[in-house]
View 1 (cartoon, rainbow, N blue to C red):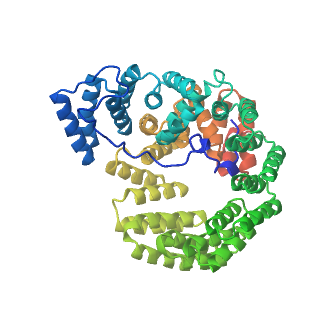
View 2 (view 1 turned 90 degrees about the horizontal axis):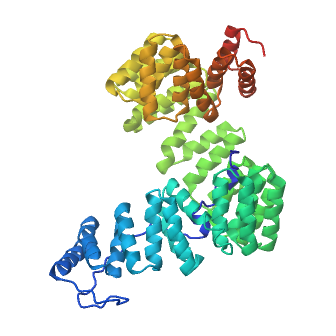
Length: 573
């Protein structure tokens, strides 16, 4: 599926896209019904015996003390025994709030037997079904909800669903989408289908559902924005721009439309036109400094550093979030290629951002060749932040490696390990640095020690297994280590690559191919490409191997590993 365009990252997902703000639902207020109260609706008198009344009193007392699990323990049996819709409703809400979804589903189904059209009962039943992964049952309950109460009844359902995880959101989306054909006049259901189709990578289907949404409700804000998003996903940038320009012209005061238009312009590199829109936004609300800051960050993220600097400096002059603004100004200076200015700004940052700002200053000092100055600053940071000692040592070593001073990185890590000989992070960092120096004894020794200290350390298991596989030694043990790492992180591309490589070394290229293809699909870097190409070559798929290698060299033409692989195999591209 084609990656989504970054300028739409701020467009709300499913829940927020129904225009329902809010936060996590508070705990339901538990109210025990008076023993003499008549149930509503009174199909028959509901009598509470002494046990029921006692349990309700205990439940109420526990609720007042926020012992909600205990409240449910006493409330649910009374609900089940009496069938009182009010008590069933309270118990169902409480079970859902506590995450007891099997119990919530059972209680909501009992509630529906007494009150089959109650919107809250249908809503909570649907949510319980979704949490339990039963999308069809959820759709049936949503169907009843819409049939009896219209799509307005979806509002509390979607609001409460903000607590769902990604899979739960997907199930809810499916439940809503599946009803669009049954209720073709309800725009929210078509919008849900559009979102589901886009989630599935069916952009044409998503566009069709979006158009149906807008036909039913031409002013559906989220569908209007989704349409532009879909055009951009399809590579139709100009159509996305035209669409957004049209809706901005129609509703010039609607900030969200104009912000979306700015994002697409910035994403497409049209900075001057984006700046015009930014000026309009700023003029519409000149006193909204939060807006000004957001616009500056948007410009910075899109690479419009000059625009960002101007706005950030104006905010700094007004005293707005000075440390945050200085951090962003420093980043803008880096984009502009003015490292000295960036360093000065990083050094002025105070408060919670002080440490990351100083580390950035160290990095820039090393990049400018000011190694002594950078090391002195990092040493002072180690002294000021002793709880971050190992992290700071590792960071400085990485900076030295990135600037081409691998021996210097090793010297620094030797010093650090001398001070903290049993620190797994320092040992692992030194092992990785040793591999760059081809000091295999040092690398394997440090990795063995990391595993002695932390036997389930995924990074060390993968690194030692891969190192042995690459050296062609201890292959069975290497396979076992990589397998252990893969069990912990089954989709990690680096571990998939290691598994493919060790299987190839073990003489099992066909098995290796699957792992390497999965790794390359997630992370098509030069190392994975070298391995995948070699396995394909070994299997006789020479054209496919050349394609992989050519693509990788186009992205990383200086890769020593790729060139070494081609030379070793005698391949000319």
